[in-house]
Length: 598
Image: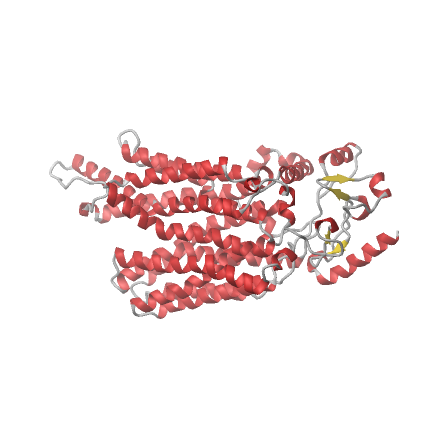
């Protein structure tokens, strides 16, 4: 009883320091009734008779939990390693998960993604142009033009009718891929919590691989595979989550094996790989086409990159989620299905399908939640979506704008894209890790727990958005190409915001809900991929003849809104859910007719 009083007193004191614990209902599996030992849960009389044993949490942590004394030296309340990796201790180095296993493979993934963007667009243009000319020739025997050559200049295709068909086709493709990825991203993210990150990364890679195969067949055998088959490739890519799920699962992998205070750096490495792929992919693709005199060679190389990525995943990259954690997540899901009863039946789920349902994780109402947690999650997700939508929607407008404002051609536009993305990669790969180490120190990460975003995270987010706002104001005010490039470099500093936002979000939920949370952000990103470019292109189209800088003023104002929202995010707020007991204990309770957890 004395121990119970001490724990109760400490819990009451903790409420004052952590808003997430306010008005928290008592948990049946806390205190002396639920003692965690290894990966098993002990409950019942034996647990109650022995409320303390050698692995019982004894020392108070700074995030409100307890440290296990056996993790550190006697009398030291610091953990010797990130708890998420303790289950891999004792394994050889090649079996321990690390972001440095996944990064090289992910760079291949990003290069393949960035390298085929322009060639695929040109391939679609060529195929549509061929069909248009064939249709015109059939209708009008006097209609004669030069034959369309893959990879050639093809000036005969630079006519409004062909351009309109290409724009319409790519719009359909992006809509199909975007809508399907919006539906599947949250599902795939949640499944990765229960079955591991590697399996779902393989699904994402398989979707992109299938898309490339269909594109090659459509180009090589147009009589058997009309170009409309490319839309099937877009559909397969979307069903498997597209590159959005690839990023989500890479971040989930990093979350599993990286301490909370290092995650912004880890996420930054993956963003750096993505922007390196976007910056170098088109250049590498250009040299491949020039060296082989074949557009299809790029798709063969991309196919090889995807296959190599899959080989790396299967044979070399260790799984970041242990079998124990996967089983615990599956057990938690099983209990939720039992609790929902008939509502969990798949037919009823289809009838009541709601595209936005996965976003409910951003508004938790159960045990351990609070208004502060909900506000933080909603604000962080909103700011993250704004940043992503601008990144996706602004580049096309920028390229079109510089063409009419400064007379830039392909070379100058490519040079601009290369400079800006190289600056962004520098900030993500070099600047952010150095600042993180200087502020937190070499050992600061081991002392930090999963206790919500801290003041450093929020400072990085605000500084990043400030530089984004400054850069887009510079775009609006620049009247020379040099100043426009300088503005792009200033805006590239804002690239450190995206990984920090993703890292901050993961610190608000328990580890077994990381994939679900990042899947929800994947849904928002997929919607932003559709809505953002549509809105920004519409603004530019409506104002280009009057004040063509209007779109940049609007983009700067959008960042200004995100900057304002960031000041309402509170540090050290998190969702504190209790662990779920093992399946044998829960099955026994269900048989005995006792209550449900959650």
